[in-house]
Image (tube, rainbow, N blue to C red; front, top):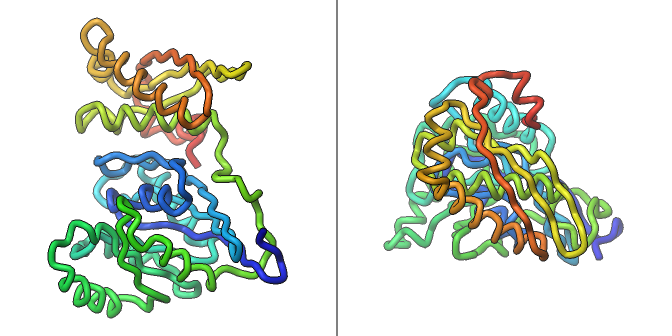
Length: 297
């Protein structure tokens, strides 16, 4: 167990542009899925905490939304504020970029990085680079852009060098007693996590337009002996999106709910009864008051 005399504990923000693999990396680092993923950008909307405890250190990772530069609106302003707040409160930062790619969106995040705390560059998706000799000049070019504490090429998808990333981060954490128990993986509730799993399936199983106008609200969450009952509402911004989600005869919504329920059962380790509705709530993503009611920070 990590102790105050010989152990370290601290917060580490994982930041980067949308769709660079931040959530996949955090899930890999803690060894459990607590942050949802999809191929669509801007899947993460909340500040998600994941905990990894080793004999020498406890890492409290903060997965942040991808910093949004292309779109305005209350929701994206809230997400960007979440990123900035996380950067101001942590002990260290992991800045994630894609191997061989650094564009204007990455540059926007780079400008936010703190200069008074260690920042480790994680060059992700190295498994997609056929010629590994190209990684060295890219890493050297990145080293010239910022004073990184270290640079680690990784593959979040395959787990390549993620242990090395932990080794590099550990000395940058303050000496401290652990904040969480040795088996804790997140500070989020099961109620929150099942909502995120359902939202993930909406992202993965619908077209490009629908997911960004939807969110999930758990209206009732009941635990009994080896059974959890979840009553969830998917809120959509436009009436047309409701029909797209439900599908002919309700078949599409049934498919989404079925896949989500299977993941909920894996997460909770018990049977799950899931009932899902689709409700129209126009303008929720542009209403700051509605966003607060829906739990956005």
